[in-house]
Image 1 (cartoon, rainbow, N blue to C red):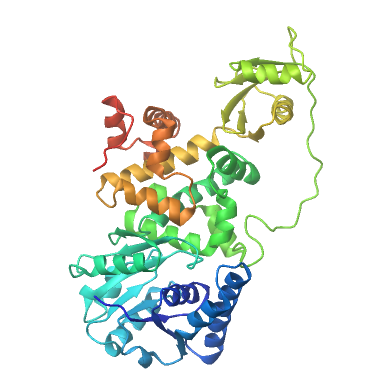
Image 2 (tube, rainbow, N blue to C red; image 1 turned 135 degrees about the vertical axis):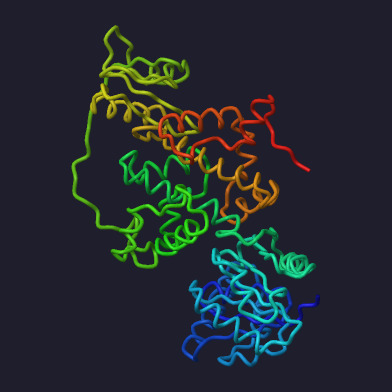
Amino acid sequence: MVFETVGVVGLGTMGAGIAEVFARAGIRVVGVEADQEALDRGLGHLEASTGRALEKGRLSAGEREEILSRVTLTTSRDDLRDADLVVEAIPEVMEYKVALFTDLDRICKPSAVLATNTSSLQVTALAAATGRPGRVVGMHFFNPAPVMGLVEVVGTVVTEPGVVTSVSDLAVRLGKTPVAVGDRAGFVVNRLLLPYLNHAVTLLDHGVAARDDIDNAMRLGVGLPMGPFSLLDLIGLDTSYEIMGVLFEESRSERHVPSPLLRSYVAAGWLGRKSGRGFYGEPAAESTPEKAAASTVRVEGSQELAATLAAAGFKDPAEPDVVLRVGEAALGERVVQVRVTGKVAELSGSVLTSRQAVLCARDLLRVAGYTPVPCRRSVIDALLYAHLNDAVHMYSSGYASIADIDAAMRLGCGYPQGPFELMESIGLAKVRDGLRALYAEHLSPSFAPAPLLDQLVTAGLDAFPRA
């Protein structure tokens, strides 16, 4: 297939970015909006984006002018009649998209491919609304489209042979990495990302740890580019809630039930950055920070931590103010369990542990150079292991390859490692055993280790099979 002219319907931030990507690759673009006011906003997005690239030296003035000259803007869908491919980027409302695809099917030439940029809606339903279901695909770009390197190319059960391959080849021409997937809710990235984010909201709602502590644990402990609450505010809480609803509608899985706290924030209009308030942005509450001082400490299970605190002047008498037990359960009024991951130290106690001991432990770990995360139980284990388990289930179902899943999460979410790379660096047995412990505590199917993971560990293997 030859794609010389591409139409883009919907020129909001996402659609304008998609138009820019095609124009940068030397392809003629016809951008369509509902009215002149929306069209002017779309042009503004294009000019602002390319202007920033010019200021940063990523484009010359001549290159910018060429890119803009390749884009024709119109309010008439009939101007798409000669397009080889049309990508829609209108709001995520199925009724709107079905009506649009029905109209595009009438307007566009029979050979044209129709693509949706939906992040979670069913592509098959859009294909069925046309007389060319075999030439309808998903082409899911990530925001900001000119920067993000991933495109999810979604085929359906009725997609003609070669269409997904041709659209994937086009994505390569655009300088993107395509990941070809089937038509399941959330595709790869959102199907893995949103349950993890939703789970973080549940931990917050249940008082397992505070917002900033959860964000710090995943960012500084695991190495993710953003904590879950910062990322939810960026995505939009309403968008996240809608995607969780779509996932649950398809799977009916406990893992995909939207958090009641997330629902409450959306109902209150706290949608994240777009509304000025989400999990962040609320007025600062006036409070007096809790303080506690320890002059003596005993460290059990880490000679390095003991030496660091001794060098800082802390003594270890027979009856210390607090006992830091690294890796082992805490039992006693002054005993606090410490779990170190990277530069994060998760602190938790038993029902016997005093609040004073936890506060002392928090300040001691700061002295030792760690970011302390007070929590009722490990945030990192609960969030990370369930997230990785989802990736194993995805691969085991034949939905996507290990290479594609890893590439999708690196390029689509900025992960330093893909889920399978991360599991292998942690150790498959450690992940499996962590899940078993979580399942024993919660009896939730979400924490039951995926059969493939269990089988690999039982066989003594510490890597996933790759073709």
